Length: 639
Image 1 (cartoon, helix red, strand yellow):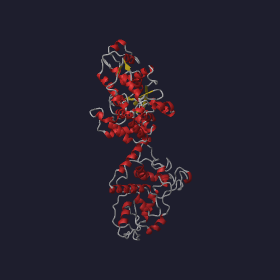
Image 2 (cartoon, one colour):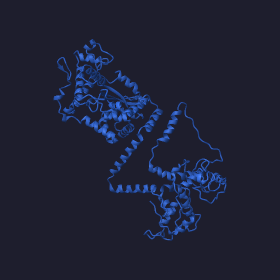
Image 3 (cartoon, rainbow, N blue to C red):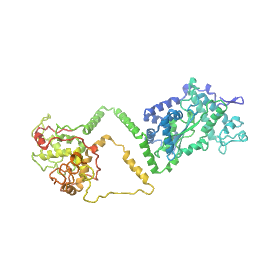
Image 4 (cartoon, rainbow, N blue to C red):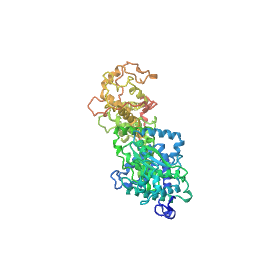
């Protein structure tokens, strides 16, 4: 406590004799510890919820931020935590100043942040520590409060007030100080708003002192007092704070008080404000909520003794609108590529999905959904069992049927297929349905019945359709340019659409194009479904749009049945020997019929990567083997 003129300047009554510590709100230190732990464990949801519950009520009457849009705010906060650098985590832990002196990796990362902050909006913070990262203790902070209380006294000359006003520029004359002028209280005149903010600050220090157990009041704070803010150009803004220009008057006065107490020998350590840029904003919508969330997370408010912010955050972010859309795009691309944003958000989605499933308490609904999910997984993941009928596999891969049946336009029949019918064009799923529903197909106990008949042509089609999904078909029809790739109609000019970026925007267009193809998040299950029929769709489109050109190319010996890129299959010649005439009776994948019918698909699919196809041969049985076994097939099955 500082005494002047045989008088103690204390805000209100002596805190040592005032409020019962048991009546104080939840301990600031315990709250900060909990939040730091949640962040380290990547538990974003409870952390975000608790911070926003504290901060959002301040904006109930604000037009700057919509309090009711809670989902959007939580999403922005999740993106902030997911993309936050290690500097941010160290700030939440309260160890940023000390770590920056000893952790070379952290220092290197911070150098990159400083570089980007020259042209990217960001969140900055100040921490009151000595040069080693040591915070003031509760008793030392109470001494700071006593000095501030003396500074607020009005109507009397104060030697301490004059000394404090001359710690930093601009200096105040002794005559002006004797007349009551206070640098940090006056604008054109004494500001009632600033005085009220200092009173709240003094009360907050008293509250924090009471929260601290008596045995720990000489121990440095675990979390140093702090200040937090937003700026489009944090380097310029931090320079203003260092010069005490257009700055936070509470923070500036406290720093001057600490300097004065160190110079006079009252404080052994010199506590000053240490500046850091702790987060780079990559979306315009983040600007306001980022300042609100970070301020709440660091508990920088004067009311609780945690810091020096006296006014609500997020109200002065208009400069974010002056950042162009192209610049925001580049900032977001950098966040996706250079941080753990994508991985961390995927982890949060997995945890949310687990929790959602855990809340599905209706047993019947849960069982039905789990069965459907298992069936869908089996359709994708189950390997082919060659001992079972081929038609069973076709029925189990549901996603492929959309394209396997799209090429036929004949009406379904209600009778079993004739044994030697080679003109039947009934879709496969209807053949499957008729075979399984016909009264002669089984005896009701799942036993075989010899009355089921399947034509040789149907058997042939089953073979080819399955092989169409394998690696051999990739080598035949989806190989490199010139290796029998009929997607390129090589007998006619190839027209490639071109475009030109607006002058001055070439780099931005290139960056956006790269971003599109390097950061796409996909659902693995849905991608497997698409991969199953993606290659088939490509060949359907190719044959449908120009079948005659494809036949002409094959007749000229465009490549053998296994051309691939060369190697064991003979390169461009393949097994068919280059210019050998191709038999027109072979099966064509989704060849356009001679009669009028709906198109097989819209647009043209992209080439499939070789990894999308089965590595090994799918069917090892010849057509004759298939015919010999058809009378022994059981009833069709499916997933």
